[in-house]
Image (cartoon, rainbow, N blue to C red; front, side):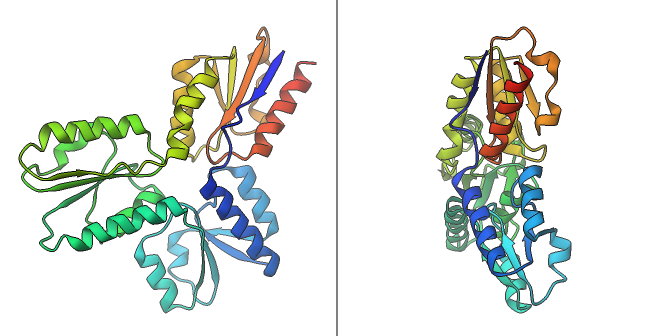
Length: 286
């Protein structure tokens, strides 16, 4: 039996840094609040919860005073920073540098648009934490499109600037960009490819990886949009791909009569969990 872990899977840089900052802060104090799940993986959230990390939502945050709050890698809109400033909330800002750079680009573009005629378009998932932070840079005016089919929401008599959520797939971004090029024939159109290459490069890598095995075990949290996207890639290449969140999800029937198993996961999946899955499969097959 061949059992192999995809070396390209596991936490991305932004998630690694957010967890590092959380752990560092918790060494100095017993309690740290985190605005939203620090990572979309229950096992890692539970581990940090035992260390003193308390996950809160935005509704609770906007009632707090005199506290320390971690901002996760996804980033936050300006309103979050302003509320913290006014209410003596110390922020541990773990916004991914790639996301932070994108926020600044959108803000500069929006503030440079003196006549406010330009439509700022974000290719992303509506309601996603990163997207909310990006929209906030335009005072809530940016238009979020989830795919090329939604371009009817735009006014093709006005200038358009296109950006992307950093974790969206590159192929989908190019499809939307091409649709805009075909429709925005008489107005200025600026296309900014802001897809994170660390994430984008995982798509061709995981496609090759998935094709090599009889069975793929894809490990991810249910809330991870990146995980759902990457699993769909696995499934398109290898129809014997299974989505699991932990070792408890492994079905013994899956691993009968297979000779090779590939184990991979999302940018929010800890390497330790991938290793646990591999070890569990080894025990089940011996």
